[in-house]
Length: 360
Image (cartoon, rainbow, N blue to C red; front, side, top):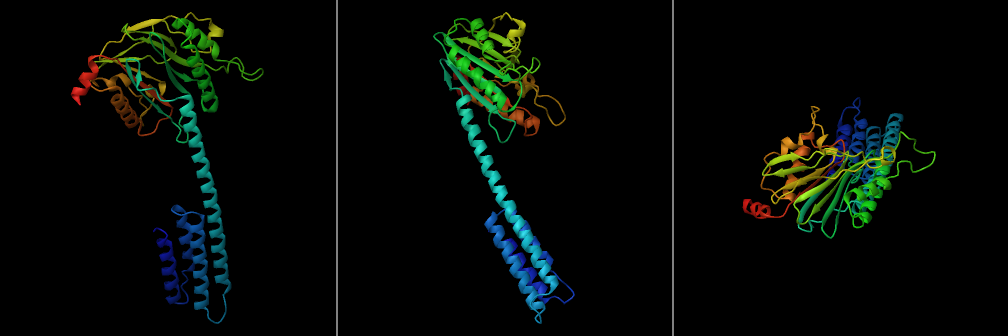
């Protein structure tokens, strides 16, 4: 029990002070006992140790000056111990209250994440998936990064995006867009119509007299459609970092030739959404991510070189890939991110599963 340390200190100081010559006073050292107790104890433990320190100082005063109850010096030291002890008890009470509030915040954020950003299912039709959300804030598990997937009659539609801004406003905007995607992904026949609908769902001036024309909300996003049998991904890029396809350990960035503006700015630019495509063959691994990955900085200021770092990562399934990417990213930044980071790995069915199993 760690509480034995301050109690032992009180006993030692009391005994030595009583036995020491009259010109040596060690009573002030008793304050160290309640001072160190908050590092491991709560208000009751601190109060107990402080009370023992006061009792010890009283005993010292009585034994050292038997002719009088307590000298003015000992009375001052007792008063100081009472004030210090009371202050430490109040500090511990406030600390525990703060800890309970933080615990409640974590609970609420985890509940919000389960509602707004539930983990992707491990299987989406023939596809195998793995997702990971790394929040930059220790107290929060969700921010402005977003993702969702929906099964259609012919394949799978996905969205990955990043809301401009931080805090609860970003979470609200992300929830709004995700709700619109989940409703419309099954209804809109074409990818162009789906993206246009999502653009209209992002309200860039929600309150009259609130945000001005230069404070609009917008969301960078990539919307993809992966057919079950075609073997070619269709994509609309709205200002978001491009997907990466890893084939036999060689990454290839699928940069859009004609990207659209971020969602929410369509009312200003009247965009024409251009659907582009790229091959996604058996054995390939598709990586979707947010700029929290590529803009993660090392202590020396260098950005995380995504395609350079994942080169040669062949023979791993999507779960192992995401776990390895997480470790490598955190190692690059020294253990702490400055921005939320989202990564999604999608595994194309085929001989890849057998090859991955054989390597294990």
